[in-house]
Amino acid sequence: MARKRLIIEMGMGVDQHGQEPTVAASRAVRNAIAHNALPGVWEVAGLSNPNQMIVEVQVAVPYPEKVRPEEVLAVLPFGQKTLTLESGGMVVQGRAIPELNDRNDEMLIAIAVVTVLIENE
Image (cartoon, rainbow, N blue to C red; front, top):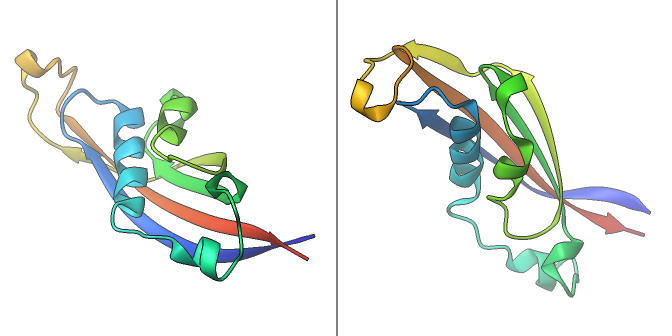
């Protein structure tokens, strides 16, 4: 069986306070899928269950080694999910606010691509 791409969506996520790359990555994935409806999965691709979708997520984020993958993938409600992390995104000078548990002035920005594939004979 061959895999065929059905959808590619892009998103951006920011953690302004807390310096958590997992938060920025999760927000980027949520942003990528926020305005989607997938009727083509059933009407065109003929899937009978949304968990038959193959969902590949790629995120470029500062400090990818600190990302908790299971939390990022939990943003996706369905599918056979995989996550690839790479160093990227941006670190921007913000303002540390102790009441928000900031460790420094960094704001972390992540970029995500979510690709939905189907198995095709």
